[in-house]
Image 1 (cartoon, one colour):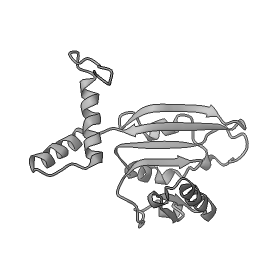
Image 2: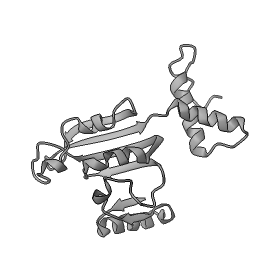
Image 3: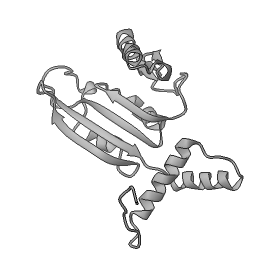
Image 4: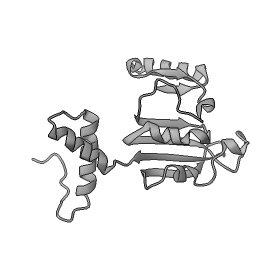
Length: 183
């Protein structure tokens, strides 16, 4: 679901999805999130998503909402401007402080695959993070409980379970990596 307060951006998203024959997978919602930041948004959001992407936008009060929208095992891609301002935006409320994304989405809760502070081609400083929300063991316990009740796991749940197994097995000294395909 694409969410923005400007129709033109949502229209471009829909046009791009149509061009790539992905229209059935993309929905849009025209809404200004800033007035909703003090209470849970009454929006048709899924409880959680596999990917949340925030581009060139900062409204600190909704950072906890962004975190809650990401499923365990889901991804966050976030990039926006930071201090010092070398153009627009200029107001501090629209500029990240040094290390702010890394502090807001900490390594205790996220696996940081990429985090950097760099300059855009026009010279403005920006922060970028691409991180995966860690799976909790309680999630694995829920999957096992579901299987014990002979209930099937969803494809996403199986992926989460495999990711957690891989994460654990990689640390085992008696496990050896084998390149595929094995013939």
